[in-house]
Amino acid sequence: MPASGVHIPPSPKSPQTLIPSDRNKPIGLDMKDFLPHNQQAADVAPVRGRAETSREKIEGIRKGHGSVCSLLMHRNRNLDVIRAIWTAGDIKTAVESAINMRDQAVVVDLLNILNLRKTLWTLGLCVILLPTLKDLLTSKYENYVMSACSSLKLLLISFTSLINNSIKIQPTGVDFSREERYKKCSKCYSYLIATRGIVEERQHLMGKLGSTFRELQLLLNQLE
Image (cartoon, rainbow, N blue to C red):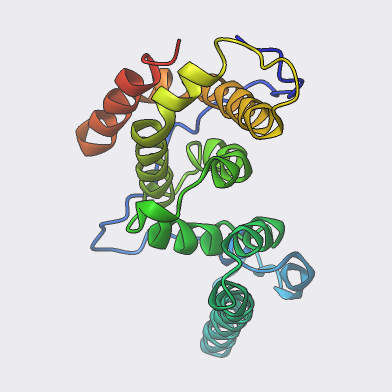
């Protein structure tokens, strides 16, 4: 393993319950999970110890509608910013901006586009996205996890050979392009190794998700 100087924190414990992307009934999502932090305090705690009146129920629906509208407007503003940067041709900055917004839904929207256009992926983009992909692998939302898995699979198929070959021998002399490639590959290697624990734990899940993690495990095993 190369000495990349990248600090990798311990993998967090994966959540035990995933919220499926395909469902036919409400599951009690908490809107606070999706709202900007500065708007979460606006919700009023429900009255305990007695049944809600009709007026209180209507007020609760109204507040819920307001929360959804706030969420959608906030996300739309973020996506407008990302689209403007992307349209200008600066994909790297668009990805960095999406990550800095700390809105996983925006990042997942961007990943879903990148997953369909594999020619846009570069080593530099992998270095930027890998820490976020690691976080998404432990999300409680199945569609977030699947998007991250698709990105990780694409990355491993496209760059494993380059990473393995590049980190075998540390560059010497004056070869700036090779040295830069070595640094990027070393970081990618470190980040990918850090995802192994999560992938190993989740490969035992049932269904399509478990199968996807088992496939990722096989790809990760190709790292030398």
